[in-house]
Length: 60
Image (cartoon, rainbow, N blue to C red; front, side, top):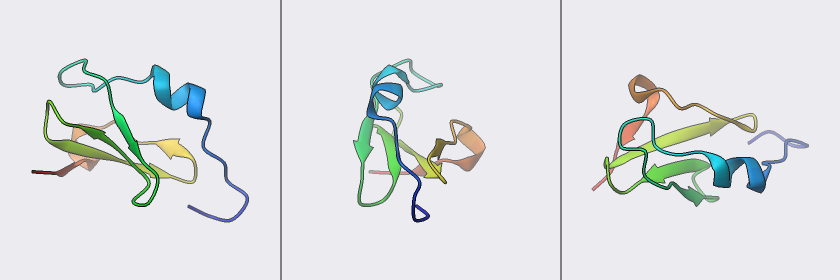
């Protein structure tokens, strides 16, 4: 995340996985929203969650 960019935690809490509609877990170290149900991690770039499956990485 670039300096000066803040992540709005309330906004993150309102997002759900676009695949399963399950709750997402915020990983502040990796700047990702993780869907355990879909085994996907969605990146957060410049404070903006990228909720596209094509941009997500697979997680175990």
